[in-house]
Amino acid sequence: MNKITLKTSKTYDIIIASDILDKTGSIIRKTVEGSTAAIITDSNVSALYERQLADSLSAGGYRTESFIFPSGESSKNTETFISILNFLAEKKLSRTDVVVALGGGVTGDLAGFAAACYLRGIRFVQIPTTLLSAVDSSVGGKTAVNLASGKNLAGAFYQPDIVLCDIKLLSTLTSEVFRDGCAEVIKYGVIADRKFFESLKTPVENHLEEVITRCVEIKRDIVAEDEFDNGVRILLNFGHTAGHAIEKLSGYSVSHGHAVAAGMAIAARIALRLGICKADCLQDILQMLRRYGLPENSIYSAQEIAQACLSDKKRGGDSITMILPVETGKCILRKVAVSELETLIQSGLEE
Ligand SMILES: NC(=O)c1ccc[n+]([C@@H]2O[C@H](COP(=O)([O-])OP(=O)(O)OC[C@H]3O[C@@H](n4cnc5c(N)ncnc54)[C@H](O)[C@@H]3O)[C@@H](O)[C@H]2O)c1
Image 1 (cartoon, helix red, strand yellow):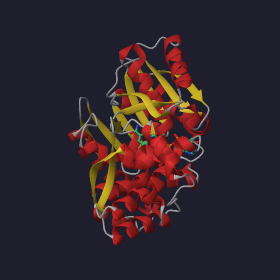
Image 2: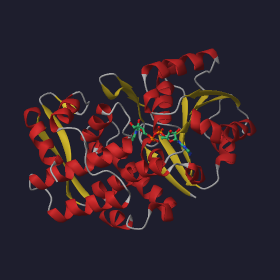
Image 3: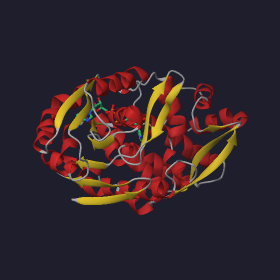
Image 4: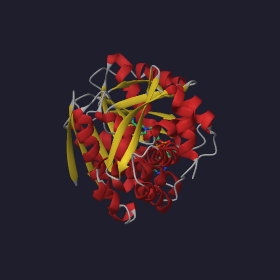
């Protein structure tokens, strides 16, 4: 078992272990007093783990209520968000009660935003069940829903009280969803740790606990320095500028992880064209994406991607901040004028 403590506006632990779902109730009880636990989960995860979690929470002394929504990114919208708020009100949760997100990034983002807004903030626990949510979305307090105009356009910074990552839950993931998480794992290597990047030549599934722990450590260090995304935290968006655009253009049929993989390849080609990185850096990143069966490009045109980028929240007035690799293990932030964006993305699409 590994325990990582994150010190932000709220200090909390991220526990990474195998087979701890049965102990969840008693672990949460040490942190959250409350009498009711509202489990928020999607239809797939509910069928697999909701009963076990509810039993464990009951054993920890909580009355449990469950809200189940249809799985998938298309549920991450204002309608589901409002339904969760109404559910919490109907079940009469008070501010000392707890919202428990059981699921991937979609569940964590939705449940976290609802926890932030209901009664202006209620206790909140994350139990990630995808690799992506284990290494990224469950940690750091970003919560959001999508609007018609783009990804994550409404949300809040709202830190959980504890994150419980049971690695055993990842065993039921499809290979496609597991590989989504691998894209975010590769991202951590490129932005922060060359040695870790190299270690990913050994398949992630062969050293899962170490991989998740290292990613969470990197995220902890970045979020502790910049909780509200004004500086170094922007590095975590490597691959996300074009990635979010690709997700949106596909109507969310391209998953987040796969879109981010393509976005990282596009950013690395742009870095090469601008003379920020060398050819071997680009090749290392492309080879790593290939190793995990992740995309290296997009079917959308530079014009389509640039247009979609402009509704992204990373835009600041007439410029947009791109995250570009210098070498594996090190990225820089580069402001580019909105007028240059399409040309740059075009160079990022050319192989
Ligand atoms: N808040 C943040 O900091 C942050 C960071 C990165 C990504 N995100 C968000 O995360 C989302 C993507 O997360 P995701 O990839 O986890 O998607 P997801 O939550 O939709 O999960 C992917 C699929 O896996 C299924 N699933 C989940 N756990 C399972 C399990 N243990 N066994 C079998 N199936 C399981 C789900 O039902 C779903 O069909 C995006 O909306 C993205 O914007 C947020």
